[in-house]
Amino acid sequence: MRIVLLLVLINLRLLVSATDDGSKKKLQIGIKKRIDNCNVRSKKGDALYVHYVGTLENGTEIDNSSKYEEPFLITLGYGQVIKGLEQGLMGMCAGEKRRLVIPPDLAYGSHGALPTVPPDATVIFVIELIKLVQKEVLSQSEEFVMRDDL
Image 1 (cartoon, helix red, strand yellow):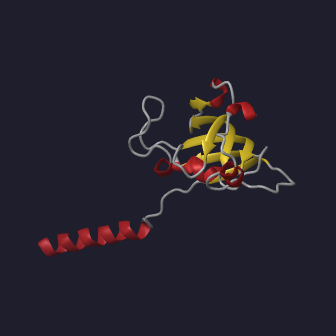
Image 2 (image 1 turned 90 degrees about the vertical axis):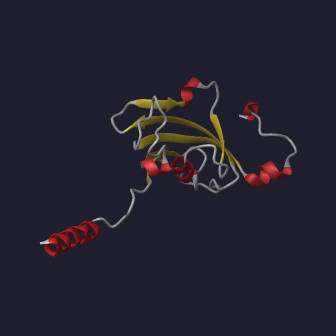
Image 3 (image 1 turned 135 degrees about the vertical axis):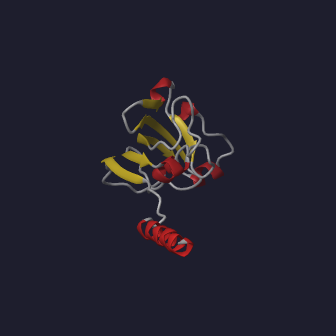
């Protein structure tokens, strides 16, 4: 009897393993506004000035850059924002607008960002790149990128 029960449990485990490929949801990037003649795309180290609206899947707003007087500044590659947002900003052109659907493991994870983002929540950001300052330009200048430069 024990052997039969053990075999049943092993078969159930194998069945679960076979149906669960272990893959996690991936970042989804949708282009809302494409720039036709884009010569410069964002990369690690670049300074990006952006406007964005972040929501939960049910449409509840979690953040909005309109509360700031000027576009929000992000330097790519320095962990200033969640992983999915940083990945979704790579390769953007100034003027481009994207819709990012970010799974929990690339967003706020199992802890969430209470009270606005519950644990294990998928978040959606609609983000527009207003201005891009390349890393090379930043390196050649001894001045900081100032918000007044917009």
